[in-house]
Length: 140
Length: 143
Image (cartoon, rainbow over all chains, first blue to last red; front, side, top):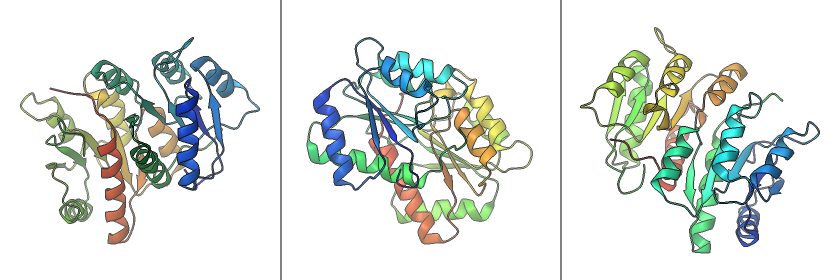
């Protein structure tokens, strides 16, 4: 993700998990700005505001109030402008249903949040390495 | 690649260039990746493989974009309109740096877009990163 100056959008209702992610990104020297939305609705508002910098990657929790991850995913993938942004699910759910549905909506990864902090950092590291290696769609 | 249930599922490489195919195979060997590598040289053969009930569905598809007959984007479009096949993550592994190809691929739901490194070491590193990432990721169970 370091290849560019675009922010990472984190859609996560749990403040402890959000802090853990921030800590991990810092530890890994990821310099992209982290934009944090606490639910799908807020995240969509952020994405739809023309003034806001479009994120390079969206990290998406599934279980959230108001608008959960799957609903958010559906909305994003229906939107001609937003659909090209890669979405990586980062959730506690390892339900087959959630996994299959997420991949039906073309998520670009599905990580179950490790309980152990060190393993959590490894997961974020893998995400960072992969999305630094991968090209990203430009043009907004 | 893929967690315990999925780790014997093959990886499907769709690549028309024989040298690049050999490079991928070599990388897999060097990295000791256990998943069988199924190589097809075009989109049509890939679809035949995927639609054959006897074939083991791959856990990940590595897709070259520039191919004769059916190019990668066309293949992607077809796979993503199939209710079962659409859940298999597809990663582009291509020389194309065209903005159009990137945008079109991501719009169609590609799960990564990697430019083939020109040196072997770089290539192995890329495959290593892809392998690590998809080991971390859950994958949909497919019959």
